[in-house]
Length: 431
Image 1: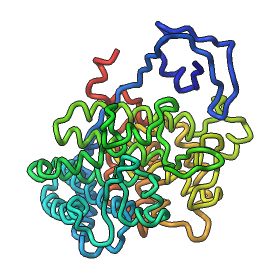
Image 2: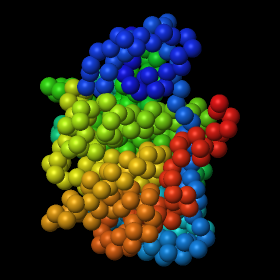
Image 3: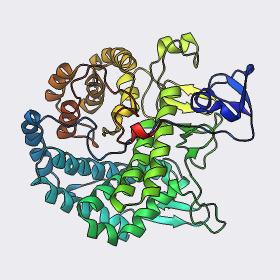
């Protein structure tokens, strides 16, 4: 078999022979021959947590609570105008973040308001009573589609033809996980629907009568997900946003925590670890690693859309020059797991410095600026905090309270995130 660079990084070499002189060039880097009946690959453990990894200092609570109070008071389920499964899911997850931030900064007054909002927004999708859209089961392909997507292949970004399933459902599952955590009785009532959503892209069943395709999006050879569904493209499968893929498996692991399901926590944690390492290998462009040629590394610090046999600097929704979008689509949504996705602070500095000039362009959205400042906060908290305080708007899945929580949970060390094992609760059992 041929191993790509990430295989070689994770491969236990005790029971295989690596043929270092047998190499083939590929768009994914050198493919190296490996002789062995089976491969054992180990990822570093990921500590899937509800709250920030390093915690928030008490002196920062007041500023976060002030923003959180405003954000929570503006929650109004009846004012939601979108029927898009993607944009609706982002609003659900945005509110769910507020409940967890409230727990972390000891502001329990916000939680009942968020709980009410989450019930009002999520239940109609689970009951099939949402006006204008909803989820249906497609027996032919073994998965869920939306009502809009079932009659229009372009609706919901192609959800009806199985595009972006882990993106859309990941946001809903995040909201469900948080609501099941703060309202266990609600969680028990809607557990069948919650698990159906998760199984759509995370089923491990091999049974012939399984209702869902096994690991619909995740590629067990490439070790990352594909977002493309049933459409054939000249350049094969594709995925744009690695961070939204990370969100999907992270949210499923959180749902496992909420339901006391150790198996789901384990599977979600394993998939999120591989998805992040694949993102760091192929989407995060570092000079001198040998994955990409120098001419590409000089022009790009992050891949826009990664195809099976093409690397695209542009995005589905933006040209290559919109670097803030290229950065942002690999960062959103901002979660505790985000710092594990960007463990290399020197790379983060290069990426932010590469992006900052693009913010001078006319018409740059305030929401996209927020993601640039998010990464800047990994190495320069004060500068990023000042910029965040001056923002005039936020991405529809983000909020001021979430950005302030992020900056104030950076900790004091200047080395940034020290690696997945370093802050993992069970890291000392790993070796």
